[in-house]
Image (cartoon, rainbow over all chains, first blue to last red):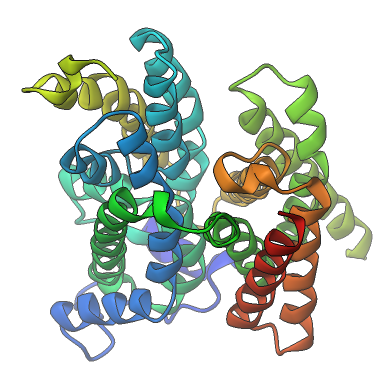
Length: 264
Length: 115
């Protein structure tokens, strides 16, 4: 019942009302929704996330790991920055507990992403193992694309769509990690810089496109504007979390203030 | 790196113990945190704003303290192409493809010019 009320909530106006008795798959089967998710991932997002993981392969090789470990790090960690940290720290002969600690700090950022995406994905019937698998698939690209695409999919079809989308992203990045392992050292420097630049330009453009409401725009602008400050003043390793909390809360407060003024 | 890394199960154990588990624990904690929240909760707007700001921060960090080949470019050479990409984005029907194409062209040009 809570879910029915949720469907009528302010944040979910795109959704059709849900019939509790029958499953609403929007006239398609689950495999068809899986394929639809896969198709949408192939139309762009997969390429971007694949390109952004090319450099991880090169880093793994520099740190002395095999190509299998490089690809496994993509599938298991599913977090570009954590992989960069891991291989970079091993190459710098950092102690293992310190590596584990830094990686754990960098992955705290998944908390708001998973907490905001899972409620869109699950139905009352979704079991814990499925939720855990879905949580594992969430990383920045899947989150940024998912938050925009998932509301357009009927609720009962969302997990199938999501897993299709994520599957293609995993497949593409696994291949690109292996390609990067073999190739990245051979690239001319300006082209290598171009590959690394893919992530920043893609995220800024996709977040701007996602930003339909003022709160999203404020979070984006404050996040970018405050980055130099937290980079300098926040404790190392925690700077992103501090930035997210400060800029996100700021955006939320601004929207509330604007709403209060707009209300009669 | 040491010979120990080239052989046997140690690299796998290292990846799982010091990479996978410390990272994955946050996703699993989040599964439980997400349990009590439904889609219309006002908290969700806040959580989402935090996630968006975090992502913007990831971009800021990549541009401010880059690694690898990006680090060989001056700061203006990283921020400028971002601006070029976003101008293309707004000029050409808010197209992601235009943003990436223009930004990439700009940074590769800067790379060849600066080196």
